[in-house]
Length: 159
Length: 435
Image 1 (cartoon, rainbow over the protein chains, first blue to last red):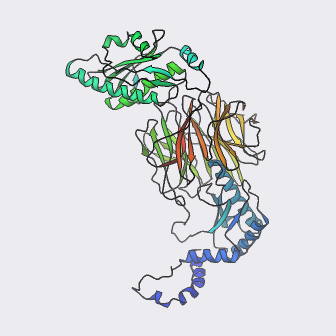
Image 2: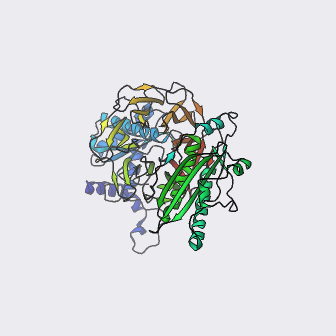
Image 3: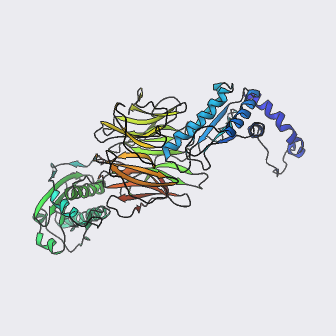
């Protein structure tokens, strides 16, 4: 899985590095344009091709809107093309909710998004879920994040 | 811990003083004036002087404790009010009556051959001229603070009829860093603010620490495994472990009144339900099955009932069920949302977070759901937790800039007071009296 992940990333990353040939030079000064790691490139591609990484909910609700279904359909299409890539859906509760209900609602939102991806034919092993409750600022939502399985700690883990 | 009663505590019920206090104007402060002349010593010579200095420390600690309550109003101790050892049990009542005191605390500190101290405390009804309660301890010198807290608790209970909350612990989540990247650590302190320490390093998000009844263990939620999971800390050894094996999302832990079980919520797919498990591990038992969010469960003080919140009706409301999950019934019926409930230690009241729109306030109601009363104005108050006295609540208040702090509010209608902690704080939880 690890090998495939880098292969795809290298293909995507190729045009970007082609524009910046000096990056290959040893001992060159720090580049002005940040270099994207393979996982960042893959995440950007996932967001661009899917039509969005995040689906939004009404306050207090875990029901998928039509707009959310459209985005999840785009995410499912991308995931079908990248069967070796695992994603995690991170649910967020309402910022003005109480702590534990927000955790549960965030988990429910993540589960609804995951269930819809599975309904569209994505293997359940490819999609995990977690909840942040109201621990991250922002609107009620669920964000699908491409997991970095290259050995580095996942970006959103810990915190 | 090392504080041991060496004499049987004789706590006489004192409904008389409490009744007198309650007879005053409702809403008006009805504090009982209490005199705390400096504790004395039977020791003489240089040892006597040394013990008098220690007795003075204890006196000041007792005054500080009682001044924090809304029921008692201590007269400031004056070192000139020295009394002899025999006067500990034969105080001059007219003197304290003249100064307006309704109650009196006397006591002594005595050195022991083994290097420890004997501390004795006596509580009197000044108007009736009779003893209400007495208690004694043999303590290590380092435990003077706790002995003083026990004396304060003795006076508080003798006068109000409720257990004191001076020898207790408060845990909370210490928060630092910008609102977008908060560093959260489980913190714990004695309820007087001493012995403040951090139990987690801040490398992972933590939530909702909850102490076992006598503050020997602590359960909290950690994101260490990538998803929220309940972990248990043994406070004596410092050892930590997950409540359950595996990677299920678990949260909202609460100890049973005897400390033997832990209630918690667990996600099964999109469904949050309430479970109970032995505090030492084993297989959890499921208590609710509704296809809705059931969470924030806590036991009644006798362990026979469980209070929880559920949005099975469409909004968050409070429910009560038997400890085995049977006979679930709704106790709140309002357009507001009710959440994060906790049963008072005396069993009579329920504290909760009341939510309407974006406003969150702390409220109380009778255990059957009647007599609702909101104690705070919000707009962002939550996570109430009772003091052992059942007369005060600690809670989280978030200000307009998003920074949370810990507040205490008394049931007498006085304004909430902000607690002094080294940084921002959230999710406070107040233990019962330590052993």
